[in-house]
Image 1 (cartoon, rainbow, N blue to C red):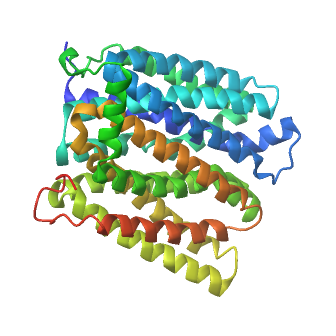
Image 2 (cartoon, one colour):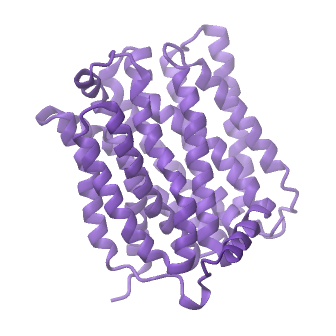
Image 3 (cartoon, rainbow, N blue to C red):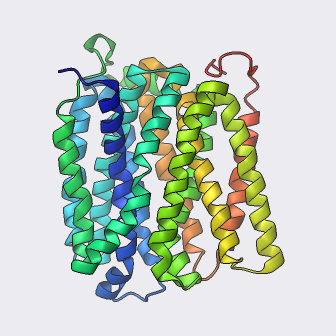
Length: 401
């Protein structure tokens, strides 16, 4: 029986959820992991466990080209085993170096799943409808940071951190079985060859499209802020603010608000268009970042805990609301090379964003000021990119630049 739209959205969200689950559920286990590996309890080294997983997304550039040639499903079938095996290896890693390697492999697998999911959505939908569908997918998938920290904490009460690390590959196996119902979205007559000229032509088409570059740049900037906070969130709450028991509640509460923001964005993008919506959201983002920086300078670093987390929650919510819009705007002009485009989009935003985010994380040993300053710089740069798109807002927001 053919999969209906509701099931497709649920499956796509679950597939993308593997990336979030592969991060959020294990954050409460970092304190136990530090103890087992002999690390200082305030060490920011555990942030690398998140960063290396994100860096695995660089493989999207390979998977995107292959998916344009062989279809989405074969690449999806490769991604799941890599994610599952990498997750199992990480759970039984004897040291941090082995752990980082296993996490990179799991990230490579997640990149294949993530990329093919976005490409298959682009194959089926376009324009504001794609932005709406992506927002609905993100609404479902963003319940992960709401429940994952509590689930991780619950597992820790009855088992070790290794059991927490085994939860993502187990869920991945379930989603893998479910994905067997999925139909191929890329017809054979629309597939490209693997000849160098064909590949270079596809990449050239993508990289010469100013709309793609503009909105991929915005996503990369925002992901830098997101990855630096997520990787350091346990350290910020437990180490800098000294409230480790509050971590699941703060992280989960932020996730709930982020979920509501993406659901709201689905209506905003349908009513006003992704182009207008993204500009408005970035203005609010930058104003909040400026306010947080002013508060940090005026009242000291770290700023008041309530002020900091209210501001960060709003900033993270806007980040996740912007992403479906920037994704739709970036990929819309490139339907014939959706696999290559989505792979370049994912590779750039995840790998570069994770690398830059890791730099910010390493600067936050005892201060949140690098993150606060980063928010304002990122918001300002994002605004410049968005407002440099001089297309008339009365026209379709998906018209090529």
